[in-house]
Image 1 (cartoon, rainbow, N blue to C red):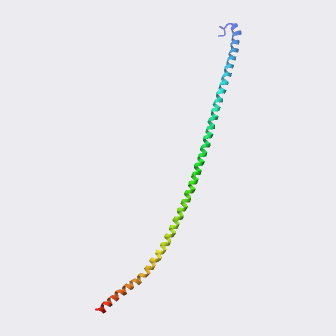
Image 2 (image 1 turned 30 degrees about the horizontal axis):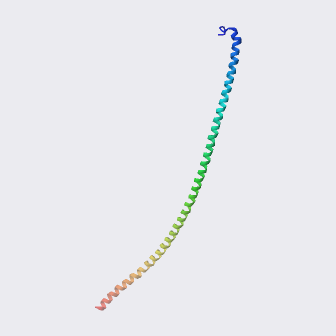
Image 3 (image 1 turned 60 degrees about the horizontal axis):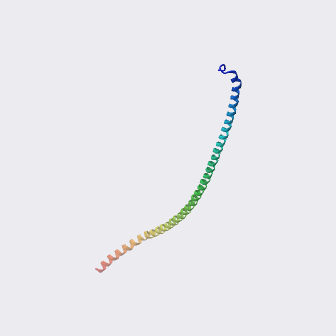
Length: 137
Protein backbone atom coordinates (compact mmCIF):
# COMPACT_ATOMS: atom_id res chain seq x y z
CA UNK A 1 0.00 0.00 0.00
CA UNK A 2 2.92 2.31 0.63
CA UNK A 3 3.79 2.13 -3.08
CA UNK A 4 0.48 3.68 -4.13
CA UNK A 5 0.79 6.69 -1.76
CA UNK A 6 2.71 9.56 -3.41
CA UNK A 7 5.91 10.61 -1.60
CA UNK A 8 4.77 14.15 -0.76
CA UNK A 9 1.66 12.78 0.97
CA UNK A 10 3.81 10.43 2.97
CA UNK A 11 6.29 13.16 3.92
CA UNK A 12 3.98 16.11 4.58
CA UNK A 13 0.35 15.08 4.97
CA UNK A 14 0.66 11.88 7.03
CA UNK A 15 2.85 13.44 9.79
CA UNK A 16 0.49 16.45 9.92
CA UNK A 17 -2.55 14.16 10.12
CA UNK A 18 -0.85 11.98 12.73
CA UNK A 19 0.03 14.98 14.92
CA UNK A 20 -3.49 16.42 14.49
CA UNK A 21 -5.06 13.02 15.33
CA UNK A 22 -2.82 12.76 18.40
CA UNK A 23 -3.95 16.23 19.55
CA UNK A 24 -7.61 15.37 18.93
CA UNK A 25 -7.29 12.00 20.67
CA UNK A 26 -5.45 13.65 23.58
CA UNK A 27 -8.18 16.30 23.88
CA UNK A 28 -10.95 13.68 23.69
CA UNK A 29 -9.21 11.43 26.22
CA UNK A 30 -8.76 14.44 28.52
CA UNK A 31 -12.41 15.35 28.12
CA UNK A 32 -13.45 11.73 28.77
CA UNK A 33 -11.19 11.58 31.83
CA UNK A 34 -12.76 14.75 33.23
CA UNK A 35 -16.26 13.44 32.47
CA UNK A 36 -15.45 10.08 34.10
CA UNK A 37 -13.92 11.78 37.14
CA UNK A 38 -17.00 13.94 37.54
CA UNK A 39 -19.27 10.92 37.25
CA UNK A 40 -17.16 8.92 39.69
CA UNK A 41 -17.29 11.83 42.12
CA UNK A 42 -21.08 11.84 41.75
CA UNK A 43 -21.20 8.09 42.31
CA UNK A 44 -18.88 8.48 45.30
CA UNK A 45 -21.13 11.15 46.77
CA UNK A 46 -24.14 8.88 46.27
CA UNK A 47 -22.33 6.01 47.99
CA UNK A 48 -21.47 8.30 50.89
CA UNK A 49 -25.12 9.33 51.13
CA UNK A 50 -26.23 5.68 51.06
CA UNK A 51 -23.63 4.77 53.68
CA UNK A 52 -24.82 7.64 55.83
CA UNK A 53 -28.41 6.44 55.55
CA UNK A 54 -27.35 2.88 56.36
CA UNK A 55 -25.44 4.11 59.42
CA UNK A 56 -28.45 6.13 60.52
CA UNK A 57 -30.73 3.12 60.00
CA UNK A 58 -28.36 0.91 62.01
CA UNK A 59 -28.25 3.42 64.87
CA UNK A 60 -32.02 3.76 64.83
CA UNK A 61 -32.46 -0.01 64.74
CA UNK A 62 -29.94 -0.49 67.56
CA UNK A 63 -31.75 2.10 69.65
CA UNK A 64 -35.08 0.38 69.04
CA UNK A 65 -33.64 -3.03 69.91
CA UNK A 66 -32.14 -1.55 73.09
CA UNK A 67 -35.56 -0.14 74.00
CA UNK A 68 -37.25 -3.49 73.30
CA UNK A 69 -34.61 -5.33 75.33
CA UNK A 70 -35.12 -2.90 78.18
CA UNK A 71 -38.88 -3.47 78.09
CA UNK A 72 -38.37 -7.24 77.97
CA UNK A 73 -36.03 -7.05 80.96
CA UNK A 74 -38.58 -4.98 82.86
CA UNK A 75 -41.39 -7.40 81.99
CA UNK A 76 -39.24 -10.36 82.95
CA UNK A 77 -38.49 -8.74 86.30
CA UNK A 78 -42.20 -8.06 86.92
CA UNK A 79 -43.17 -11.61 85.92
CA UNK A 80 -40.50 -13.02 88.24
CA UNK A 81 -41.81 -10.88 91.10
CA UNK A 82 -45.33 -12.12 90.47
CA UNK A 83 -44.20 -15.73 90.27
CA UNK A 84 -42.33 -15.27 93.55
CA UNK A 85 -45.50 -13.88 95.13
CA UNK A 86 -47.57 -16.78 93.78
CA UNK A 87 -44.97 -19.26 95.04
CA UNK A 88 -45.12 -17.64 98.49
CA UNK A 89 -48.91 -17.98 98.47
CA UNK A 90 -48.68 -21.65 97.44
CA UNK A 91 -46.20 -22.26 100.24
CA UNK A 92 -48.59 -20.63 102.70
CA UNK A 93 -51.47 -22.77 101.39
CA UNK A 94 -49.30 -25.89 101.63
CA UNK A 95 -48.39 -24.98 105.18
CA UNK A 96 -52.05 -24.49 106.10
CA UNK A 97 -52.99 -27.80 104.44
CA UNK A 98 -50.22 -29.57 106.35
CA UNK A 99 -51.54 -28.05 109.58
CA UNK A 100 -55.12 -29.09 108.76
CA UNK A 101 -53.93 -32.58 107.82
CA UNK A 102 -52.08 -32.90 111.12
CA UNK A 103 -55.11 -31.65 113.10
CA UNK A 104 -57.48 -33.99 111.28
CA UNK A 105 -55.08 -36.89 111.76
CA UNK A 106 -54.97 -36.22 115.49
CA UNK A 107 -58.77 -35.98 115.70
CA UNK A 108 -59.23 -39.21 113.73
CA UNK A 109 -56.77 -40.99 116.06
CA UNK A 110 -58.70 -39.63 119.06
CA UNK A 111 -61.98 -40.88 117.61
CA UNK A 112 -60.43 -44.27 116.78
CA UNK A 113 -59.23 -44.57 120.38
CA UNK A 114 -62.79 -43.83 121.57
CA UNK A 115 -64.42 -46.56 119.43
CA UNK A 116 -63.67 -49.43 121.84
CA UNK A 117 -65.05 -47.31 124.68
CA UNK A 118 -68.17 -46.44 122.68
CA UNK A 119 -68.64 -50.10 121.79
CA UNK A 120 -68.35 -50.99 125.45
CA UNK A 121 -70.91 -48.31 126.43
CA UNK A 122 -73.27 -49.56 123.71
CA UNK A 123 -72.82 -53.12 124.95
CA UNK A 124 -73.48 -52.00 128.55
CA UNK A 125 -76.61 -50.14 127.47
CA UNK A 126 -77.85 -53.23 125.64
CA UNK A 127 -77.24 -55.35 128.74
CA UNK A 128 -78.96 -52.82 130.95
CA UNK A 129 -81.91 -52.85 128.61
CA UNK A 130 -82.06 -56.64 128.88
CA UNK A 131 -81.80 -56.46 132.68
CA UNK A 132 -84.48 -53.79 132.84
CA UNK A 133 -86.81 -55.92 130.71
CA UNK A 134 -86.26 -58.90 132.92
CA UNK A 135 -86.81 -56.99 136.10
CA UNK A 136 -89.85 -55.24 134.74
CA UNK A 137 -91.47 -58.26 133.50
